[in-house]
Image (cartoon, rainbow, N blue to C red; front, side, top):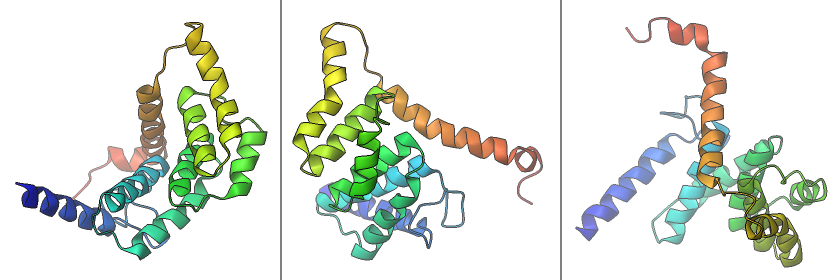
Length: 178
């Protein structure tokens, strides 16, 4: 049973690697597919998890995936998730991290605050991480907010799907396939 699990996970890694594009990001269904930023960052995060768990993930695959995260610096939630993932591999762009922190661009959702705090902590900026979490701790202690991290995550993924559909609506309405 354990060997089946390892084989299944190794097969999943192989399939995921087949979806990696030359720029290091991950396409839907194949390396030729559209790239959803959140899904691509998530694929990189998963590869790091699997590597840390002892599964074989090529250093080149990880390096390319981590290098591709720099392109997501323009969208706040994607930038924060990319910074968190690259921080896990000690590859965060500190200038982007500092800019988002200084501009307080992480103050939009609970998820973005947690991602900011985690990235800061992973980069040895413990005091700054505490500042990023301060608002959340205060609001929760007052009973003011309910944490919706799952909803924030779902929206970040769905927003990319929505944008893709809007951009390709005419094509998707036509006959696909033979």
